[in-house]
Image 1: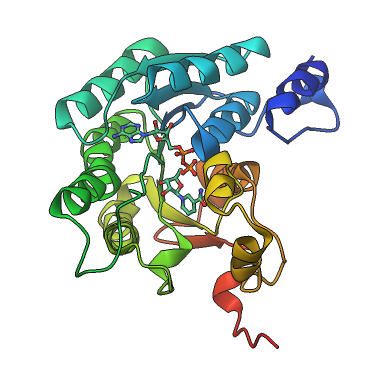
Image 2 (image 1 turned 90 degrees about the horizontal axis):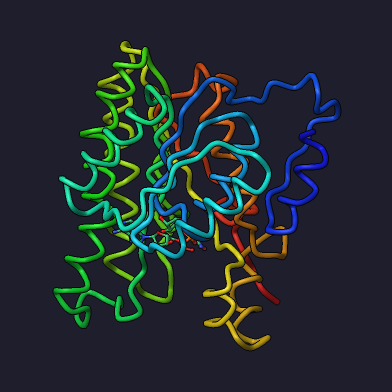
Length: 283
Ligand code: NAD
């Protein structure tokens, strides 16, 4: 069943298939996952992949149409999911509600993927970035993750343990020559708070890790990098010579979500095509 089903899901990008679908329970069988920002990009790929791997998935997104699109795609292959459309991770009462709704619908919570994040077009250097851009970026990218943990960690504890995954970025490790100061600061904060929460909860069966994606080939990014010259300026820094795909980040998240990473906590998993390992000397 899964093989056929997967053939359809792969049209929208999810890529993972077991060799013997019928006897394959799924790497997340019996678990419930809540994914924020699941209406697009990395979050949508993760929703598809997690559901394919047997999880019940709460699809959270501020965008009602984005959440609906993801839910339709998951249901198309028979995956179990719930739309929490319109939920805003920067509003504590919204986050509390999304966690409670997930528990009510699926009986618990084991995986929390705090993935929603923004990069504002007016984000720049420290001198010119407007206050409202800094506030909005930190509200969503940092406070959104803290609120997710505030309400999500107790729910995971009530379910007997699980995994929290926070999306940071490779820019938490490297200074980018094209400034985006609020975004960079926000992702550095995600790394730091993830480590601390990992230590705090290490003995109560809650693992907390971050994923640090390199540049991902999304529609939005390709619109910005609309010339060969602009693309090459970035590609020269990527040893693999290409941008990543959202599905490649989703697969790293799957590892952290599943019990296969049972001894991994406080880690910052770089999925960046080698960017942070490279000392580039262009000719
Ligand atoms: P995306 O824009 O495709 O998806 C983000 C989703 O989050 C959108 O559907 C949006 O509606 C939702 N969202 C935004 N604000 C929200 C809020 N307040 N509450 C709930 N949902 C909200 O982005 P993406 O490329 O899939 O990025 C996902 C994560 O990965 C982000 O945290 C981003 O910073 C990070 N990241 C992306 C890249 C990249 O190159 N795309 C690189 C490194 C890190």
